[in-house]
Image (cartoon, rainbow, N blue to C red; front, side, top):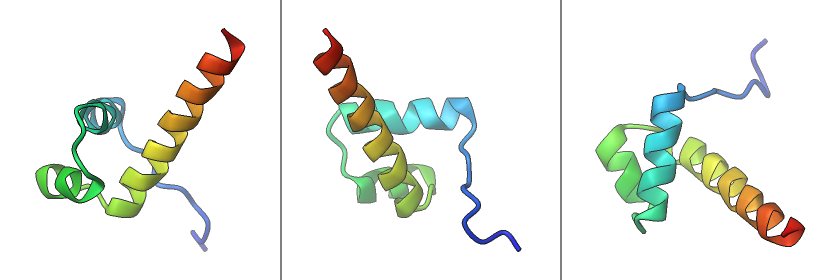
Amino acid sequence: MGEGRMNVLKPNLKATVITLLEKGLSQREINRKTGINRKTIRRYAQLHHRAIFEETESS
């Protein structure tokens, strides 16, 4: 049970991750500052980059 279940960050932590990514911090640096698992950071980074790409494609 629980396999494949995605951990979801609270909105304030998600915003923190996105802000730090946009400032150019590496996933490892964000992990050190926040304690958030690097795989979770990577997943949110991918989702964020995909959203930006789709936004620019639709403009």
